[in-house]
Image (cartoon, rainbow, N blue to C red; front, side):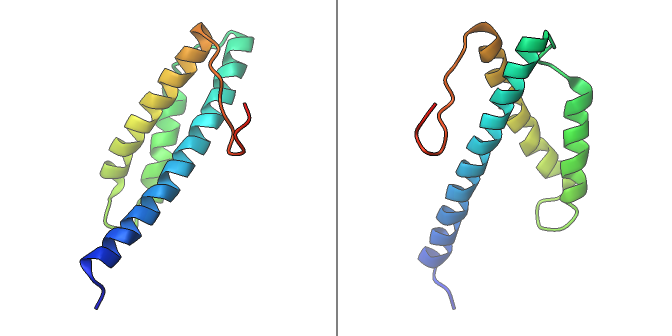
Length: 102
């Protein structure tokens, strides 16, 4: 039987992967923000946000976190991405890549 420490170590590893993936997503969101800025497109795109939420709800049909819980998590992720995009529109921010270069 696995110990509590073993399971907590598993959680730590999963959290590290999640952080890397969230930062990768944020970098892509920043690229989207730059394109929106260059093309004069509004940051807030409610139809696209609903499309993303519907997509993750469909992906979340299996597992202990159901579609509603996953959608709530992604609402927060989308809020943070929108915040980054707005910062890009007002002040160009530097996005550092995985290799440490902006």
